[in-house]
Image (cartoon, rainbow, N blue to C red; front, side, top):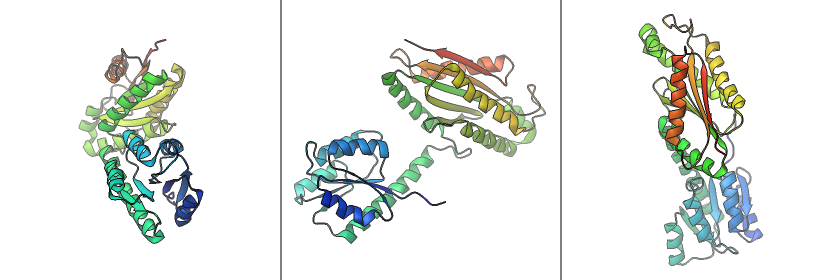
Length: 306
């Protein structure tokens, strides 16, 4: 499978400068451009380029302010910024680098040098991204780990406070998993965890949904901006039925002859009286209820504030 081309955003109010730089990269990069700082910020937040080539002298908001805003936002803080500008004095260069730019190139540019510098910084970003991904990935299942789960839930809760949309959390537990490990061994237990992780991952249809290994044999799913309870239950039921369809034998289970899961679901319209921890508590209470009522089932709590 061919990997996507790196994406570069060129920000300059002179079209001739944009065309000059674009000619260096358009054959093997996806090139975007903006002629104002405000437009650059919009494109950066939505297109998420791998690198930004930024002029200092822009109408309205100058390049220094654009860089400062990029570095103040969670979505764009890690995008490398290279200033490409006619301001070649030491004070301007020092200011640009202090704001978080990774490089500072003065005009007129030397095309081969610019290309090498851009390539090097994109490769460095890819390496950092790989390390970041490893830090938030569960090594056994490949799902998000608890650290990423907690971070994402906190961010989504804050976002839903502003949007007033419903946020849903699913917590699920493999029924009688300790007995499974005792009966079949930990290697088979690891295989079981991986297989169920794939089921959960496939059940997440939207790119905004997050599936994570919450701990041990427990998994968590964060579903932003969810619809009516029937939609939420449909996602949970896909997981429950998907695990059943695996037909992983579990002869010591009192629930079924095969591995099953219990699911607790909590949906709420976030308010200042709530918290991410409260949403976890509500989902956990429903998970406990599902287990106490016989396992291999879904229990839902919906709290919607007007």
